[in-house]
Image (cartoon, rainbow, N blue to C red; front, side, top):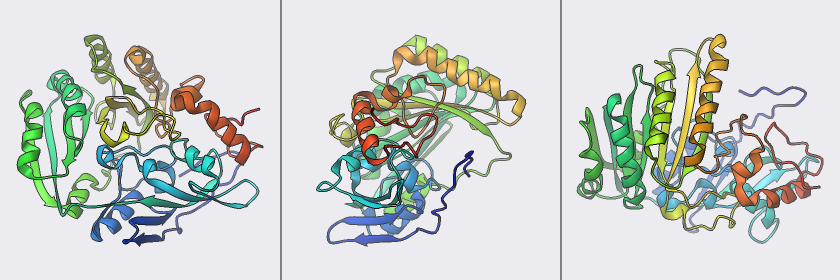
Amino acid sequence: MSQVNGGIVIDVSDMKKIKLDKKRKTVVVETGNRVGRIVDTLARQGFIAPFGDSPTVGIGGITPGGGIGPLQRTTGLISDNLIELEMVDAKGRVIRANNKRNSDLLWASRGGGGGNFGVYTKYKFKVLPAPSHATVFRITWPWEQFEKVVKKWQVWAPNASTKLGSELSVGPKKGGNVSMLGLYLGSKSEAQRQLNPILSVGTPTQKIIRFLPYRAATKFLLAPDPILPQKFSNQFSSGFGRRPFPDKAFKVMREFLEKAEGGTPAGFFFLNWGGAVSRVAPTATAFFWRKAKFYVEWNSSWVKPSHAARNIALARNTRKKLQPYIIGSYINVPDQGIKNSGPVYYGKNYARLRKVKAKYDPKNVFNNPQSIPPAK
């Protein structure tokens, strides 16, 4: 679903080829594939494809923005695994980019965001062999315990084994709870040992820890997107935490969660950072925010159009209040409330991205309210 005035929508949904080269440990995927399909195709053949938190996200969109998810501490970001691409530019020329040719475009496509340089048609990734089994977990706590749990999680998760990926979600006060989902690429007993510090916090109401064949583990983590009772509108914002939140930040969180509309997908979401993600230098790819401890995202949701302004203001004011405790923002979760967004999304890589833009799309054909303007 895309809405654009005075533009065209290019439907790539039939571009679904997936070609795995087991010997070279690479896969070429066309841009019409959804993440879940790639993950499943590779898992059946014994390989890991990194993923985010939903099976229906398009690989064409998630890749250029970075691509974060529970496997990133082992595999790196989705874009860190990108070794070659095919793109059609504004003049209709087919451009291939890898380390040897158009390497500046490959650099920019690893975190510089989609919709900036051209229409991506194919991606080539390096892939890792999958373990035969992995341990998955889902733990739930009552909403009232969110401060305790988040406090502990922010100290524990970034320092856990790099084989452990953990997503922590806190729903609205009205009807929400605290829930942690993740995986450990190893045995159940070792996973249990890793999880003990967080399991000892509060009184979990649900504890699922399962040692599953790898493909089943991906199915557990990439459960079908929930069937929502109605169509929600959302306002997202995001950032990266360099250190655990102080009490003032928890006050801001609580205020947001008390005001967020109950019975909606609103809330806070955290993902642990480090491992393979932080082993890449901030300027080695266009994705700059390498040195964080965790990623944080929040969104307000509503059904009635008359509630839009209030909820957009809620998310954006929360950003202002959290600003002292976060750096940057994630381009795949765009927030049009961010002024001068270039350095916020891309840090010190913004000037270089503008040069790449000027080379591949000098007339700025590919543009949106927060796209990269070509360098003058």
